[in-house]
Image (cartoon, rainbow, N blue to C red; front, side, top):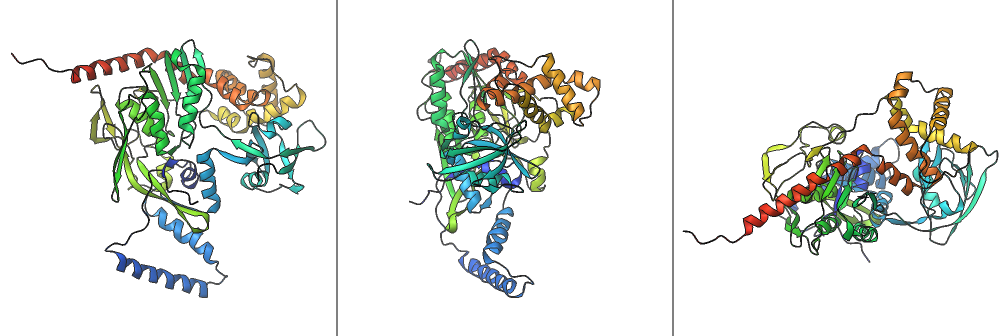
Length: 533
């Protein structure tokens, strides 16, 4: 059965990578249709064909037509349109579908590149890799007796994936062990949740993080809040930081959970795409507990739909940085040979009518993704929230309360990149992998870290070490919890130590006042007027 074309909302970290993992996939699109430009199209097609024949006949090296088309012509054409239209080869397209569905068949772990080696970052809790005892820091040396030396992480990941129920042999080197450790695993369907388990930050106030917007995100959100006991909520911190986007329909489902039934979530239209307005279908059933939504500069597309809708309806206080600013909707058109085009077919608008797309007409795509100009909002695109607060389009979602973390200094950057990971690998080579519940690094562990860093060529001053103590304790705790417990537990503890999350909790009374004022103002506006006297 052919896969339907879908709306896409995603933002690349680099042009291709984020185009793969993020985006806003919009509604179904029509196939190519005839137009008044057919004659011009035929003429240009003939010219392209002649050029391709000339290249094939005269290039000094033999030309592969597939390479010329799939690596050159199609990607080049899409890059001339806008920063988010793209061509996906079979592997890239498969990754998109896998990411949306949140599942694949394999052994279930994250890996990273270290030089020419592939290293385990974290086995997923409950996965075959986790149950078998694979650990962070293990260097994958062989898969089914084939050396992984010099292979990329993508190539190694492809070797580890396979049909559900099939066997795979993995051999790893582990610090502290002289010989390779061999694991025989059976591949399973690995489900990757886009919504982390909700938990209580303090009595009545809960935290939940959405990583991306895939097929099952709406259901996962409903389920995790139900398991927590949503009826007992007195406040919710919804974390959308770093969320690159996903499916438009899923963004609507998530906003639907928090807005009144019938409230507008988002609208979209384009040159060949008729206007469509998405509204809350089920509604929040009267659950109007205060909310604080965390966003940053990498919160994009679908994440901006949700934060924009909650802001426009005064349903949540938005806290953090100005978001990415992606207001374009891509529709994915499957092509032969398991390839696809992600083509921008529409703009999306928040409930108040804001277009939050940043201008990309006067800069390179590299600058578009990597260089941010402060205060990019459009002074001509001025709108009002339900309660009459002023909001702007043109440059992402501007938070109601700004929070910007201090940039990492040189020591923190090196520790974040590899220092804490390498120390933890060395530490657990000589210590028990088990830590007691509630463990935090004490003076002895910090002294061990200090000695390890000095012994491995890390340069820093006494003052730098002293100034970075709070940061080091937080990030070392996160790293060591991945090894001693699992990534989910690590993320939970790290969120509880996050100063931005703490500020969100402190801002909950402000969020409650915001929502209450909006209800009052909207109620007064809708109340029937008495007879004139």
